[in-house]
Length: 629
Image (cartoon, rainbow, N blue to C red; front, side, top):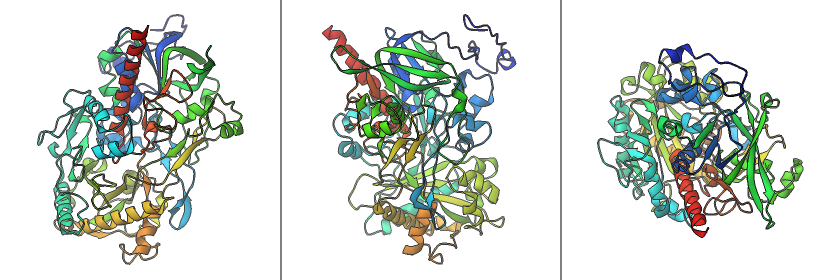
């Protein structure tokens, strides 16, 4: 079949004829997109965690038209069975966040600038790989599916007007169907699109999970200043976020519940007022001047086709394959909403002339709106992998399950006595791996650790004993970075300078967290299955991993990001409390970039909540305008 006016004919896929794929008509692959209209009521740029949710919610109103533009492919319409398989099978997450031949087609593979506070061994200047989803569903198709929203007190204290707990709680609930069998949860959703399971209900839960929780509870009871509250069956309890318990995953019947799956269902995709245009890379927002002298976002320009994504170690990459791609433009009758994430939403604003005047001029970009805060306030979580030899591998996963294993236990606690907002998160992985090659594949690549780290600095990792990994994570960092442009070329990657560990307090919290985790590993009953810690002999003080010289040096050499960038279009700075871009009418941002402070936990659910709340804010404004008319 072909679209109207297209001379190219595409034969139906044999797999589709056999019923392996959806019977939905195949899209034309010529890239002409002749099915697109010239204008829509709403244009959503970016089909990720927030964008897919937002487009689905806005299109619930049949009286408006919605266009969702996504730079990457759409797995649900792919003719190849591996595409949907790769982004829906939870165990394949290990393969998605690294440059594997096929699955890497879904990842931009951004790379940060050199971080002077992070070392490679003892040499400063380590760069960080930053996977970002290049697919409908965005990074919700790549992540490890941990479902965390954060303590109620965090939103009350940190996000301010319009985004306190009472404001956001209904939208958290709206996003989920919490289906734990062992306990009902507190203030949880029961009818949302995203199905959430509790790892405690998982039939393959390894024994190490229970051992970890029991040891953590013992350490807490023995501490003078108890950093957490023992066993917590639901760490998403808004008023009791501290404690140790089983992880929660957005997985249903063995299938990843990305926003592409949960929100853009077959029924939603059949709506006549919703158009999903994949392989549509937006290069600019058209800003026009109104009769009143104000600025308004009138439409967007985008290029059609598949981009050549970065596969190197430099962040300076240009998607040259799109240079000759056909360009299209669409206009928005009502609003344009950016949902490109914390790296690409501010980049698109700057490319469109919205940003710091001096910075834009240095790249040859004319300023439409001087907004100096665009790109500032960049934040991310960090974790430090600590490796232990395993004495009893039967307590962990084995075989294929060990290779594809995920995070099964979570401990949230505070390093500040009396605080109810956690600033550290622990994870226990259920991998117990024996081979150096497997360790590099499962741990090194997704954790930004190079082969040198394993082959030179951890020589004791060999075939004799398997090794497992425990992960203390910094989830309330004080360090702040920035997002800038490498050039004014719209096809160039953004320049991300995270400035990890630029605040000494972040180092101190991670050192404290690592030493607390070491105590848990040495406490019964977890100590019965774990052996000695695998130390880095090249660092000072390696004879005692808890010593101050070793602990800090190890944090700086092993700390790696968790791929949770936020904050570059912050509420109160770049956008107002209804997510409207300051100085431009008809333009909002709705994704992780609007977070004024990073949430104390994984950011996917809060990003979806932002999409839910943005839809409500847009709909409320439309209703008010209709009433005025």
